[in-house]
Image (cartoon, rainbow, N blue to C red; front, side, top):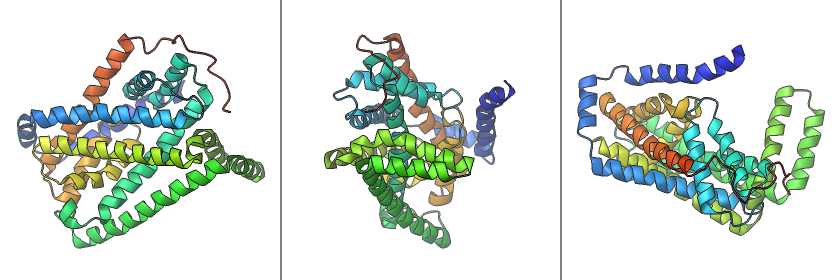
Length: 343
């Protein structure tokens, strides 16, 4: 009971701590001025980009699930994605578990592979997309990204070296995912053997996680599936970068569109710290990125972070409320067994 209580409290406490870090050294009167002067046209466009992003995630999830349940209805996928995102405001990453459960209840999609595809989406595709997007942006000419505006030469050289490494790692990770999908049975046997031989609980736990992802890699087994997943992932992170850029520009902060791509890995690290909806960690990460890389004043950087975070969550909350009102939490007519094993 105490452990569960601490788990639920850790997220809000971390959020409060990172909000304190984000607001430290910021002049509140200047922050308020940036927020009052926000461009509401750009704010509206930023909110539209969030809906596009959610729709693209739904399409990519359908691609991952195609070998398990072909031609899943887009509305069922979209409602599960949006309600799952809304639930991620709760502690414990509840939304990631809720999403496949909702889809399974409404469409009869087997639950085990649905969960596996969510794991592949987050741990494989999103990580590779973040690394590839950020790495590519870091090695682009400075005139396109304005990366050298606020960065000292040593930091700039380090960032470019990291960019090459991140992009190479993303390509290598994609190759590994394709090979694992095409040789799934052999990989499973090797993982089972390594787990049986290992005397380390931590190693067995990691191997078990890898094994649990294998059923979700089926779409990587064909060239067409790989091409669709790469294109959809690139589109997702491109739209996220555009949405962030619009929100940043709405707050009066001038950075190039390609410069917003550089912020993606930094923001991903922040969001990776478990707080409700990335509260605090997102704001601190964006403030650090804008101030240290682009030389943006702290009050303007925090104003942009507050605006982008709000514009990200308002469409999610509104869309989630609509889907819940339409019965997203009820079992659908097509629902079948939800514990069917992956084929």
